[in-house]
Image 1: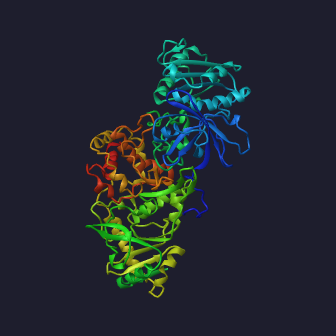
Image 2: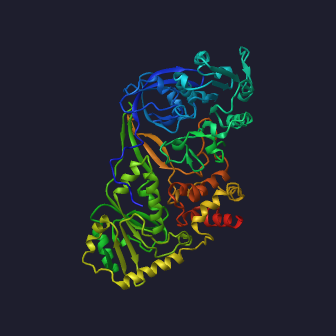
Image 3: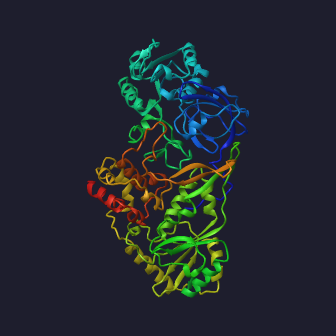
Length: 289
Length: 344
């Protein structure tokens, strides 16, 4: 064993400066942000990847990219990212106090992405299933797919939310449903008096969609409990594990496969995840804990 | 370059080294031993059995600055290291350092670790006093094999003299002060060989009942073994086993303000998978909520996950965890032997 040649080695922990461009509350607990890099050199990243966002003096948190590279200027230095942040810990609480013009830091993008740019999805029907905040990263994939609509077959989008007050991207859901060959079905776990849509957990939507199991690739993004039940239903529909993709949430602290916080058995979710083909993790005991 | 030197010659050489870059070496501390900055050769304890903390602290310090920030959102890298000498590393601790070398060099490489590592000159020392918990012999790590990365090696012979061997250019430079000493002859080299043979046998205070390469295989089938629950039930989640471990490298990162709140530092500190919140995510879900799951994770990391990454068992047989564990559940030999017993 020999050590690699010394220096110059980039510091993978060094954030790059960025500014907050837009802050829009979506619900009581979630805020939509648009961030802009202040220096050239960063890339937008693909759907499913994440950035490490620094609020100076508070810390760093891994946040999913919610926008699609297809809506950003290619090749230029004008890079912006959209994300939705729920107030959960110190850093996200500090992000909720940010205003347009505030300076933050960004590292990334990191991790694997949803297979929107490969034979896994091109020419195939897509079944996109989002639970709760899972819609935030999945929105990046939906935008990507709709921007290259002709590359894919039928697109079915299932969205489950706890209650009507927690719904995200309400206007966009309606826009997506207008696109040719796209079906959007929504449900809430618990209705409010003004809700006249579907009520029930997300699996109750599955009997209402037509799935050609030989042509379909499913992409899931939601909490572990949703995966457990949705997988059961997808198996009933005859979808093979090799055609099911999902993003696993972990605390990616360093994002470079070192700190150990995001480890799923022997895997570092920040590097060989967070997006996995289900077949590759079906026998990994900690994957869907 | 292999020299044969007397104890007084060794002390004189070490004194000459103290005029150069900092030397860190084992010294007595309240009845035990610790690596610390060496001020005079008389403090050097080459007869130490095991140090409280492993020498990894010179590459992955308990606390280090990664990045300096300003309140306005300016960021500056804090990669920095001055040359230093790490003197008197036991072979098993060298193995651990070399494992960390491989892990921190894996893309994307960690400039903070690697810069410090390149600034170091490593002097290995063969074990003279066996500790009550050493079991490096059973893991094949009681002595240094030829493929390790270090600069010089020192062995105390039974007559009290030393064989000093330079292995790299850095090592030869360090041994400049021994240029006039006689080259080690066949007799002293044979005596050194005897020390190695003795140490491979002697560092077996706990006896592993299998070849170490069998451990990843045993673990592959042991996810649901009752031992995780049995031992885990006694665990205090104090993390002591991880903090004294030479191959543990998990860390936490947090921001700290300087007085005046105009700027501050992002610091990295040791962390460990045995702490209750280690695998918790925002919103409260904890992916390793039970003590058994955390206990199992630690042994899988040592015996399988690191193996999957770099092809080595991340237990080197130093025995520090055994001594550090208040609940008396941290003996890796006991765990792996039990899995061996229960595996048909």
